[in-house]
Length: 409
Ligand SMILES: Cc1cc2nc3c(=O)[nH]c(=O)nc-3n(C[C@H](O)[C@H](O)[C@H](O)COP(=O)(O)OP(=O)(O)OC[C@H]3O[C@@H](n4cnc5c(N)ncnc54)[C@H](O)[C@@H]3O)c2cc1C
Image (cartoon, rainbow, N blue to C red):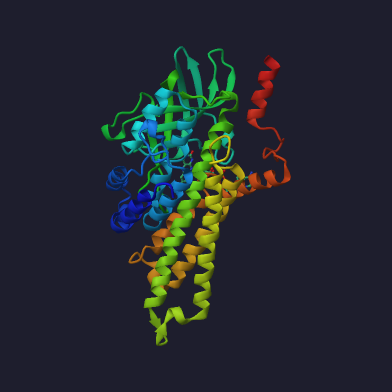
């Protein structure tokens, strides 16, 4: 790792602070503010932010190494590390103006976990079918719509809201990202911005998963995040940045699996049945070996994807590598954590051990950030060299807008 001291700090924090507190956040469903203070102090928020903006210029691969250590102890905190280094903040650092980069870097370095707002009640896997609009009015954009499943809604200050851009003349221009700022701790939200619902999730319980409503929310035009190729390719470029978050999500799953494997290994060595340690039963040894193989294979795929960013023109991980690694790591981790729980017998099924929490937490990673099914479709498309339309008539809303625009020109 380019920044070995960071990894050492992350490992120490995970063992001494994050692991002992993890059950508490799960039970109370409270956001882990104490852990955020530790992350800020250790320099683990905004590691990927370039030095010119106060960060350390760490690579996505560096972040993966840190995330794995944190995820072994606390899935919730590992998600914060991912979102404070990948996804929305990396999109701003890649495509943002000087003003946007300074503004967002300062927030993240001070402990804010950005919220990325793509999903809507009617647009989950079909994300490009989003209905939220950003209409240009004078020197601002006016946002209207509802976002759902927004991680950190109600605790995050920085929101990157994806919306259909409508010009002052009423013409659809593509999908853009809009930086919306709030200060939840001071209960200060922009006029028209509300947190309208919090979901009661099965796992990752300390993290608010919320619905956000935008009613005529005004965003200054200089907070529109416009990739170099403009709004027309805006969605593709913004989703390119999202590939880093997919690698991060897979890494959390792999880290949780590695943590579960360590618990199971310890238990097999300690627990005796039939007069000998469980570790002596070959059937259990082979389960442990399969778990180890799964963790290692996932790690290799994830690191390959993270490192691909270092040579890609966009500076983000390769889309297919990211998809492949996330599908494999998330599904493998769900199986590994379930097997680890099995190896602990009844103890695995109760909250004396962290396995039941880990099993609930890890279940999310084949859903959030692109489901395993949708990512498989993406991988198959790359293999076959075809983009299979998912709509019944093979005609997406974006294509419809494009042809409408071409007809008008
Ligand atoms: C804990 C959590 C946190 C999240 N955080 C965020 C966030 O911060 N920001 C954000 O924008 N979103 C977030 N999401 C939303 C997430 O990205 C969506 O849940 C995901 O994209 C799937 O959308 P959906 O849940 O509406 O499922 P749907 O799209 O309704 O899919 C339902 C099922 O159908 C399958 N399916 C759908 N279409 C196809 C197809 N064409 N081919 C094959 N199978 C298909 C899916 O794989 C899935 O199994 C989060 C979700 C969760 C669970």
